[in-house]
Image 1 (cartoon, rainbow, N blue to C red):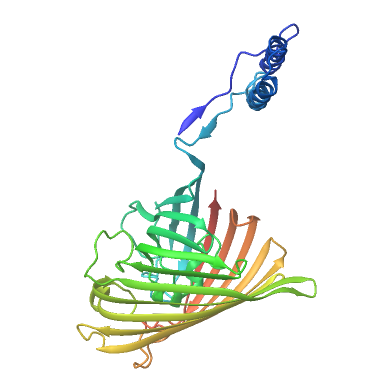
Image 2: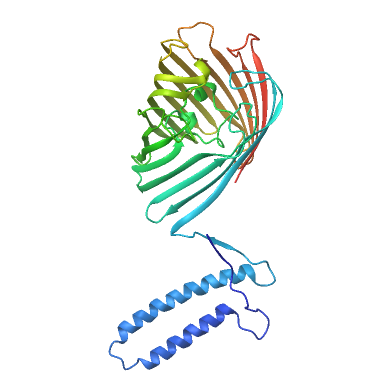
Length: 418
């Protein structure tokens, strides 16, 4: 990037001429001299057009100088303008910090301990930009815990890192590392979730971020969206493929109806997605695979819907997975499923939101008594929208990995997004 500072030296005291005014007088005198010298020139019209073009350019420079002097003159600190080093149209820097306190037990298998703790849940920094040639890019890193597990130390790692060609809205091509196109809730940014955590079945069935390529787009005035892609299937930040097979994934969603119910803006959305992968060794937690490493064939699909009307929102999603294992652990072949239902409403418009969710996850439909059912109760207080908000969640679930019955856990979170 190049740093441009304002042009200094212009004075606003009595008897002096400011730089913008000097430029204006210079333009006027130059134009007068040129017109006088070329009065008898037969090509006067062409020369006048050239002079008009030069005057417009000088006027633009003059306006820019005025803005710079306004920011740096009169004893104020100099302003700094950040510009891209190449031909990018724009560069954006952003990030998110989520810090929280937890207390209680283990309502589901994602909580590895019942110890109370403070947690830096997410600490992300991202840089993105666009080129005039219809290319865009994004680079985002994680510096926090990144999940609910008890990580021994924080190590920075890449989240999104991709290039995208976006000449046409109906067919953008993306290559690099990014979210696998699966699940409605997984596609929602972590900064805009109704609850501090995604539902248990969403976390269990989703395929995380992967390295690969995808085509995505919007059609029918953005009423229909799709993404299809091919990936290594090994999860994020793995520079290898565990075999010569790939993961294939796709998602399609649409808005069948959009309008008003009374005076309330309303919208109904439906979607479905699926992925298929043949693996030799990939990390898959929560299904009882040896060392949480899966080898075999897996095929997973889901359907989802949501309805928003005024200050109310309803959302539901159902997951189904079929697994064929190479080592017959926990079984040679089995099915798993899960679902969630969410209700949310603003108690105070744009300030205080209440939400409740019921979720269920069964890692093997052939085995009895291994289902985790969980309630989540939440309150969101928006100080400045999602940019600055406080969240209070209470999880109450019968963790299938525990014999202690229903267990609860409190999560208090503060979020800052910039």
